[in-house]
Length: 310
Image (cartoon, rainbow, N blue to C red; front, side, top):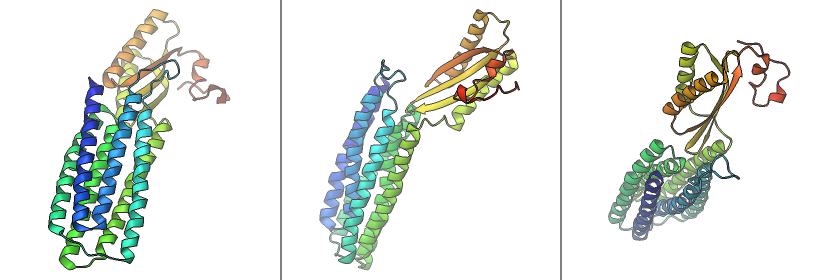
């Protein structure tokens, strides 16, 4: 089942977080580098975020009910928002620690062993992050995609920390260590801010992206050419892994109800073939009736006068 695969991937993320926390903490203890400490702190965020993601996914996969007739998929956005907030908290903590070390630089010890351990942790994150990112895009899961992006960002952060700590060991410039940690904190702020923004944007009922809209337009245009009918009031929104599409179908008023119904069924079948993750709503209207053109706006009461037929 799809849900079982998603949970297995999130458990993989949890396992990766536990492994990298252990390895990066060992690297910090070996070297005393505040840069490596900042890297370990971000891995703690990864662990908490993966656990929150599993809880959110469990709720998002619940079937629709009387109180949530459109399903629970928007819970995925809360997970991304929580993860982004945790990332921002980690950045502040790292920044405070780094500032203290900036005022009182400390030497780095056992740099070679510590960097080797940290590199191993980064490779784990890279592998798991790529798996989660691919699966998130394939399954249209913002939870997996956000987790995967975070892990890959963590890899770039770790690469910077490793390079910086190596530079400190080679040059003896101890002040580079806290400077690197501050750069890491800024990078984490950017990542966390992007996750929080995406979460808020999703909760605002954002429309489908350009690729999905192109699929919809292609289907509607084909029926315009073949059947001589028209469409308007097309509205779309994304709710986690689920999409919702509504459109009004304009047909000749002389058609029978059965004829119109059969046509709408074919339109929905073609749309569903292009967008299997979408829930569709269609409304049949006679193309000759002026009232059919008074409900194009989202709020029909706001339409002061009927627009002309195109």
